[in-house]
Image (cartoon, rainbow, N blue to C red; front, side):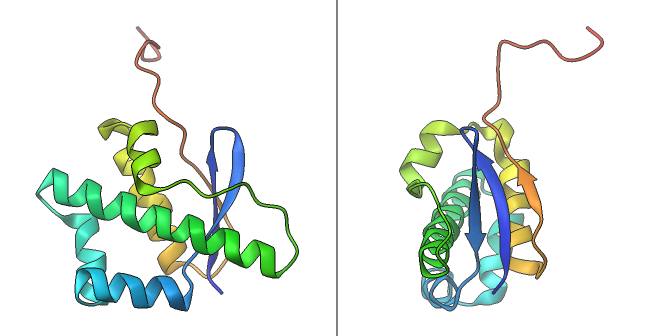
Length: 124
């Protein structure tokens, strides 16, 4: 099982690219190539819809996996909740988290925290 980790709201959560996610993504996007294509989509709305859908599916599969192996796991967030939590400026980090879960076979932590609009850029 391909498992990655993401931290959301201070809680580490597993992302799993399970067979169920693969089947659902193939049905939604039309194939694996098209699933990867959503990460390179030029249309920002389609890209965000795809990334948030994939992230929610990976979180749901991560929770199912954690339950099956007896590990604690917070409730997964829906695509709608993720859209309310993250901004467009977070899309690159979220895309990296999704790509890590889909392509890597090793356990690795990927940090993706909601952006803070009130903080100044270092050096300012």
